[in-house]
Length: 222
Image 1 (cartoon, rainbow, N blue to C red):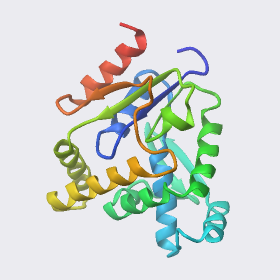
Image 2 (image 1 turned 45 degrees about the vertical axis):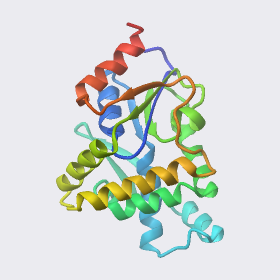
Image 3 (image 1 turned 90 degrees about the horizontal axis):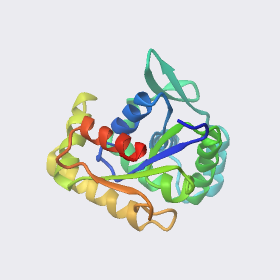
Image 4 (image 1 turned 60 degrees about the horizontal axis):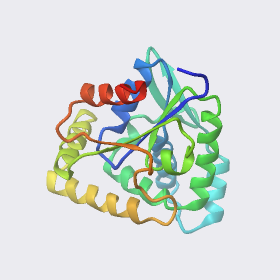
């Protein structure tokens, strides 16, 4: 990889962005950045302190006193909030919903985008989220947008939750994903949509390895 290259992987909830991005980064010996986890971390703080998302002063105070870092130990990446490992805690349906609300707040997005761009300055990084290729890194070398059917995304999300010890009714899960899609796509701040020059990959009938191979093949120009 040339020095400074940035690969963005965007897409809606439950499409498998994190798994794919981690694997692509590992395959290419690049850094991996899960930007969605950053919004979830803020959402967790909002919940813990019972803050109002309509109070900019409270949000500013929260952001100025919040330290988010990614730590890699034995090839396992974890996210820490003010020194505490919150990797599993931020994956609950409740935090997912709050993080989608948090992402609509310009004051939060400005702060996190500033951090994300600073991390990405050195390049040689795979970043995943919802607006990486459209807004955060519009000049990225490679842009990918993953999508999948609603039912398939619900199945994948339910499996992920079960692995974390969380059980949720499938119908409720589908409604939650539909609601988050609507909010992400219709928000005024960097709405979810593919970048004009992104490679769109429908992962509905593809396994993880097939998606990874497709991305790497596209990057090699094969």
